[in-house]
Image (cartoon, rainbow, N blue to C red; front, side, top):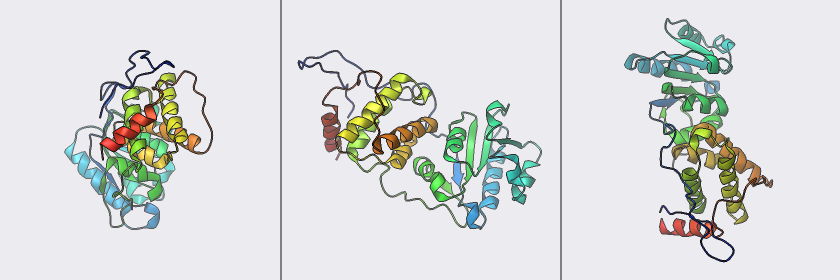
Length: 272
């Protein structure tokens, strides 16, 4: 249920309408709109690398653009003959975590080998990415991305992620996140002061109201609901800070009406 959440003065009157959301889809393409796949961990053996190369190659054949092999560092190919061979294929560009930002890569399918969460977020958000295959170090490192993006699971020993439970189990927390999602400018990835204020206010209201904050779940929920992955990472960091007992200071007054928690609770009840 979408509502305007008004600020209310101490006398109970209306202090003025304050929209707490933007138009859906404002400012960037957030929802993943390209094919994606993930293998199991290459550390567990099996055919993770071979499966990733095969899937990646099939996307290269189907799409225009420049194929990208994305690695923590260039030496990572030394221990994986299949990746070393792929890096030598004419037309395939190899970039590392350090070089991607300055690279002149024009865009195309990506094979990301062993990214951490930050660099997975970066390549998943990159507007040049037209297909993405991930080889993880371990299941935990890609769990949130898998739950949010629902990629194809490939290989004989695929990643194990519980896809059956809700991304966020507390319906009140979910309603609050929906309000926050419509409030912030996603192009800023929570770097702007008003957006960070709204996020901190939302999370503190939930925490003070007795609702537990589970940072990994919030991180999984956000990209699945229109957040760029880098913004979702910052939201998770704020949730972890507050769940850990620290209280980030609000530099400006909370934008929400005083009874906003009751509104979220009612909206959660209405959706049952």
